[in-house]
Image (cartoon, rainbow, N blue to C red; front, top):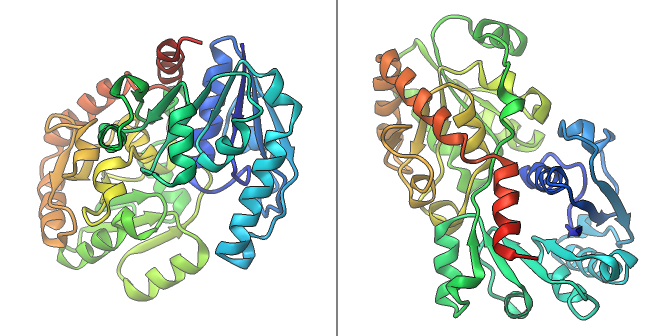
Length: 368
């Protein structure tokens, strides 16, 4: 089967959706399908080959099509870029030869739908219900949602539950099978060798809850460090000024992720409850890589996280409450046996959440 994945994304990108798209395409191709990923031709400061950048096998094709790259001009520029890419993708020969058209961007799928002979599958991550989303929801063979909360959202809009597939994000377990030692990771990253480290890896956007983790540092004993890997340079600079006792290492590429996780005594998922995407809709990629690490997880007690983790696989704290997070970190730091048990259970659970299993389930339900 010829699968066309259309994604309005700079490729490669330091943002997590780039990894998610590449791993999904790799998984579809692993199942024996011919996969083409269509993305816009845009300026990119990352010069690496996308397959090398994400440590993905080159078992599918990436095609870049025209778009007016005006994103630097703000919202209007983004809309122009989005629309021109969507038109170029819709007019490409790949649309007419595809057996299945797959995508995350409702505007692109809206433009493609009049030209498509094949079924369309829309993978939604945020809960969109604009004009384009309504049209695509009616036209699509299925909507793939990454959480049960998103399924409830679309069901409330009148989309039949039978047309909605819940498929949380996943992980490639092989990428995390042979991480370096904790001491080696800390020496490489310049982190303290002694003491405990509560580590966060990911973007610094507001709904990620990183402020809560950083504020927690002042309530921890001196032998517990808070370290953060990720963020764009201007974000990191602002966080360093605001939280001088927190260790900020900036952005590190995906290929280092397994080794970087090894530096932590616990991995923190501090999502806020103040944003609906965070509380109900998200399926964080870091959640699954954390689970694969063999390191205990400290997580916000949110419905979106509880869909995957439970009290046997993580310890939870009250979202947006630094005191609650500090207390949870301190208790876990003092009980390594509990941490080992939690990490083992999380590692066992994550075996159900591989990219291959996810792709297989989606195609089985779609029944193309």
